[in-house]
Amino acid sequence: MIDALRKYLFPRTIIKIRNGAFQYFSFDRQQWIEMANQEETANSFFGQQVLLVPESQTLFRLRNFPQDHVRESELAEAIQLDIQTWSPWDNDYDYYYWPVRAKGQWLVAVWIWERGVIEQLAGDPQLVPTHIMPERAWKIAAIDNSAGSVSYPALYVDTTESEEWCYALLDETGLPQQLNTVADEQSAQRFWRNLDGVTTDYPVLVPKSKEPLWLPNEQRQIRVSQALPKSSALRHARQEGVNDWLDPFSWFKPLGTLAALYLIWLLGSSLILWQQGQAVNEQVDLARSAASDVIAQRDSVTRIHQKLQKLYRLRADQAAFEKILALLSQALPDDAWLDAIQYDATDGGWVDISGKAKQSAGLAAVLEALPEIEHAMFLNDIRKDKQTGLEPFKIRLKLMTTVVKSEKSS
Image 1: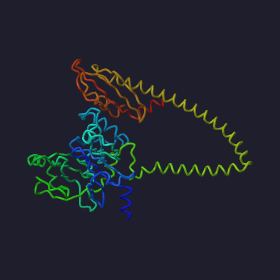
Image 2: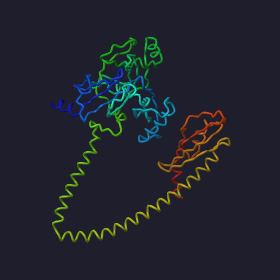
Image 3: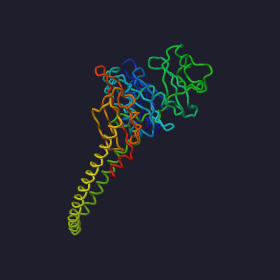
Image 4: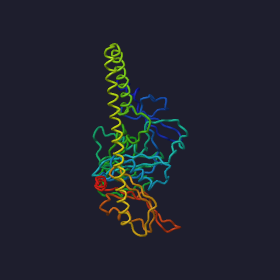
């Protein structure tokens, strides 16, 4: 009874795109069952709908970022900057990423696809899913290990929407390290030859509904099914502005609103009782008049203090910026000059510089060698201008915290 009510109120649905149409699968009794159409799903307001992007439309990369330099709150920005260096669609793309902490690094599986590809494949669906993620990412994240029979690292083989085989190498966290499409026996043999010999000990995870081809005899096979995907994989597939009521955090806002309404009701009742005593009203009025004067004086002092703090920050930022200009004039070679420089004092201090040089490749290393610079990284690809023979560059400098602090203290 409870399971039936949960399925009705909080249904879980995945949506695949096949031959220009949607296929709906509903999670029931620990398995995914295909529905004839969307109406057969519970289609509840509180349901979770995950739209899967076909593998043939996505591009996969495994990236890593040092945790010392990239915090979790900065990870999305770092990934977007990184995607711009290898995306074939310039800025006209959507993306999904699945991050895992490992050995002081952020290991991030990234998929990108051309913006508007879903409308191209299935028309204008008027569909508002709670999550959108690549089909391959969902399959890997939804491997059922409830019985504890699956161990990682492992290899996962399954077919794509075009019935080609896809071989995935999964690390000890279950994150995909590489994906290879295998169309025939020769390409399968190349895949196995290119793997490290240690991987012969890895189990091969095969869906129960599939009969794998071209697997070496020494590889141990484990039959698996799809269950609910890992929450860490679903997290970054969540669509902005769409509530996923299966996520407990989605209830914070409405519950907070109800609590606020209840508090207002309590205050309203107290106000009615308060108004019944005329003597109390007179005392409150006197106290309010006196308090308003105190509050006005306090606000005036606060505004003056804020203006002084802003002036101190401006002076400190100006001193730090002047020192940065002096450092750059000494460190940059004579054949390099700047077109623009931008200083940001937040988070310890950042400087973005852009310009041109005959040889730009080594500039980041030269600047990073300065004791005042903590880290330097390029924000663009280095390509020589055919007309001028110069190489435009754009470099972001992370300043040492001690540099900014010393300038502010002075």
